[in-house]
Amino acid sequence: VLDPGSGPSLPHSAALSASATERAAWQAFRAGDLDSAEELFTGLIESRPQDFDGFYGLGRIALARGDQELAVTHLSKAAELHGKSADCWAYLGTAQLQLERNEAAHASLKRALGLKPKHGQALVTMAEYAAHVEVDYATALEHLESAKASGFTAIPPELEPALRQNLN
Image (cartoon, rainbow, N blue to C red; front, side, top):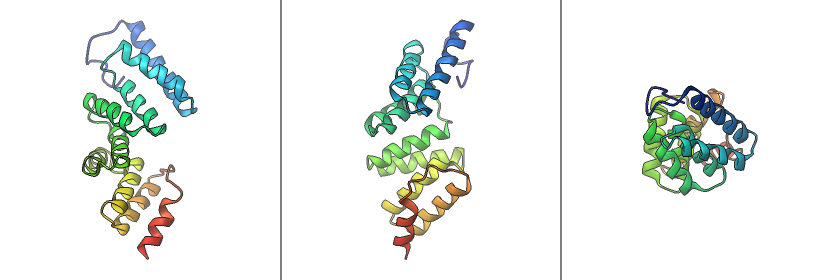
């Protein structure tokens, strides 16, 4: 729950239940149990239709499953609900780039990096954008190096060698 003061007030037990549901959903997501995570995030939205975490979680699940259209739908709704989430903007930009919605992807990634300049996912996706859209391998490599320096490890293993090969 990002801003407990917004929206209708919930009884204390309902708020605790939603918080426990959210924790369980992310635990299932991290464990790779996307079906359970989806069910839990969907339950959050059913009980609180304006739940950022529910839409963000469903967006991440859709992206993990390769359903970029659905990811964009859920992540766009999450960004509408909480526009200050760098994670949300980064993964929205990732889904948009995979759909070749290049201008929208660039805008989302810039928004993520404006909120958190060392955001690993945003930097990696910005590297992919620079390489594939701008055909600027030097800038792409700079973004990739920044992502690595920030401690981000979820970097596609083929990305750096491909950038270095195209740079030469």
